[in-house]
Amino acid sequence: MTDTRTITDRIVESGVIAVVRGVDEEQVVPVSRALYEAGVEALEITADGTRAAEMIAAVDRELADTDAIIGAGTVLDAATAQSVIDAGATFVVSPSTSPEVVRTCNRHGVLAAPGVMTPTEAVTAMEAGADVLKMFPASTVGPGHISALSGPLGDVDIIPTGGVSADNVDAFFDAGAVAVGAGGAILDKEAIDRGDMDGVRATAESFVAAVEDARDN
Image (tube, rainbow, N blue to C red; front, side):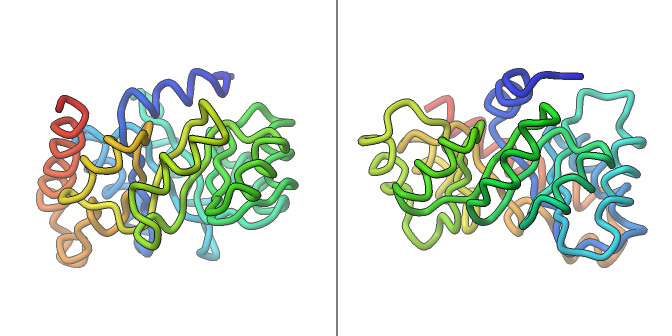
């Protein structure tokens, strides 16, 4: 089993987590494949659907021969965390801070990325054993909130998600983000609706390029 530090390092190295939300079950596998081929290594399949565990397992099987990192998002409770971990998720992302979810991940050696907004939430998440912090929704507070949190908390890995786009990704990295999470900006819903995986790939490639440019500057 890959340890959480290795998973963290790989996410940081790649710079982006693609949030796969609202994709029909029969399209999740080809969409995930297209995202991976576009240069996205970390794929977050959200657990707000009725068959999330099955979709995570299917994507995990599809990309088993690659270096893709398959995780779960929108995990709100320990039972869901256990379900997605059993399905093969190597990282678990939440929109909120749930110590129970973090502890479940810790027991199984799975990266925990709880959602935080305030210093209190950040400290609660860190004390529970979080590996990284998801700043959500990032669009509400903007890039400056990363440095505002990092000031009193010290060396903490923060991944802003929610409202991150190719136009503002450089500001988030400049503020200290170790990676970003992106949904609408990287997932071309119109191309998905058409079954156009070339279009899905092209949109994702553009976002990956924006991330690479932001980190090079």
